Image (cartoon, rainbow, N blue to C red; front, side, top):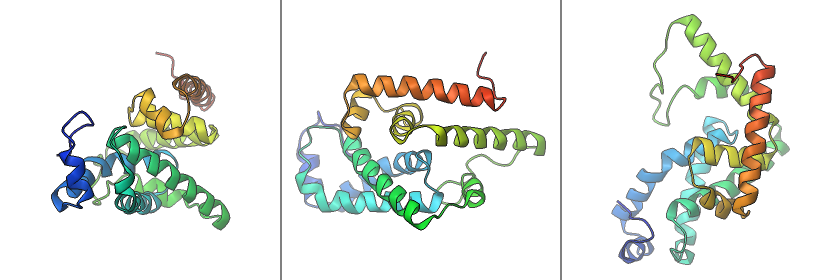
Length: 197
């Protein structure tokens, strides 16, 4: 497994040499999180698969420029963010958005296995309705708020990592996260999914 930045630099040498085992370890360690982040940022399952593949193609093409000053995860999520933004621009131009396919695809992981097996119909309906409400509320966030919210809340990245990925100060990341949380809470409350405990 590829170690963190504080490990000896030989892992970076192996990556730059395109060592198959090292490259596979990177893909295995990061592909699911990258996929989930892409989905959380509003891409369909198919778009998220494509973007994650593009991330690794870019990763291989620019590996010699990676100096190891930030974590590999931060670097990969930075590439992901640029690819998601490119995908959004392409989708906006093409006008493609099939919500039914996205809702159905969200039930499966990249290998086609149920993420959570089906439950009783009324429980499934409530769960799907809540997921739809969360997606709807995410759509109401600004792109920057959504990116910060997904990376901090869903991917659980540190504020310092998110600030590097988005090229923002840690303080600005905190402000965006606070505003995103408030808007999400207000939106979910307005849709009848009160967040008060």
